[in-house]
Image (cartoon, rainbow, N blue to C red; front, side, top):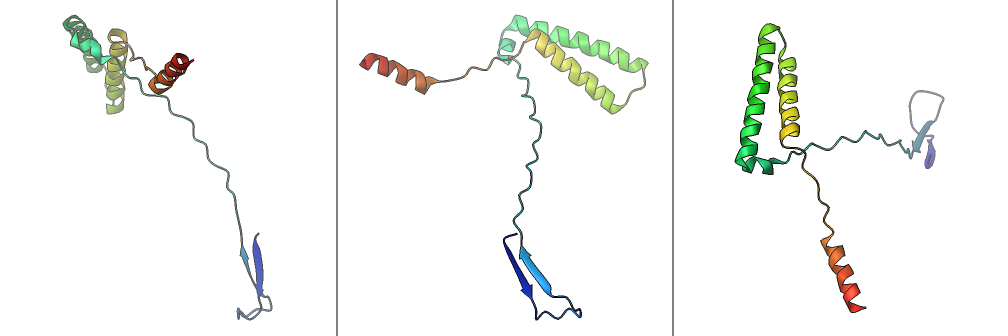
Amino acid sequence: MEVVRSRRGADVASDHHLVVANLKLKLKTNWTSRQTALQRFNIAFLRDTDKLDEFKIALNNRFQALQDLLEEEETTVEDNWEGVKEALTSKCQEVLGLKKHHHRNTGYDQRKEEQEDSN
């Protein structure tokens, strides 16, 4: 509590006095779990016609198998979506691979070279 005041003149039809207070309250921060980074696939491989053809064939085979499976069973829209999503991500990762992240420290590298040259 920062400031507390008693207001004697407030008419509240009671034998009590009105109390006014300023409170300073610190709430605990709610930490959320950090989301995993998105998987980025190396789509530069699709410019190569051999990789593109391999990707198309693998994806067509996977979707054909998925379609045959879905025709046999009665499934919900959510199940269908999970099947499509899993098929896409697994074939992309299998054929294309994940994109590698390259950290750039160009400013640091240039300054380090300049310092070495000046010495």
